[in-house]
Length: 236
Image (cartoon, rainbow, N blue to C red):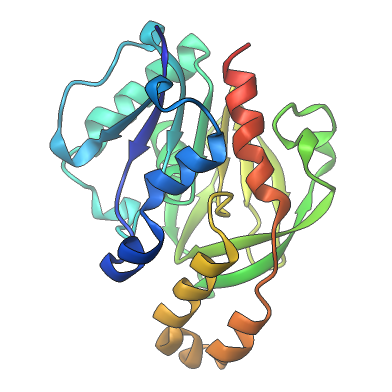
């Protein structure tokens, strides 16, 4: 039986994990699949990755590390991702995963020149999403939860930009017909987003922003629907 693989690229803060769970828990909840059909792969353990023909789909989580840090496991995972893309295996790469997918395919990742984007942001879809099966469940303009310091500064060849915010030009892209990267966090609840806002209180202060005001502006996001949609697409 093929499984949906959640690639655990990192962990949330220990106190957030204790109260709300970790990245892979939020992704699994959003996918809505039976637990026996989901496999979590912690890439830090450097174990053998499954063959593309044994995988129903892949979701890559966020991480607090930076792609430019070059984790020891990164080359192995990047090579695997290239094989998955070539074989047409559905991929949904989130935040760090979004950047990792771009890096694996020849894009450029680095620090955003204006600092961090934190909080609920307005994401605007490009006309390229009109025929996109994953984004079909989202409106043309929607609120999304965001927390990142690095960005995709240059996309890989043969990719399509799907969405942007005022701060972030590449909030989503697609490679071929089956691989997506999203800079925003479809798996974040409002409670988790507020926790991340307060964790970055000092960073926000440096940008002249008040954490209480940013936390107060956190709103529900329809982006979570994307996870269940991805699960359905991967099962076709």
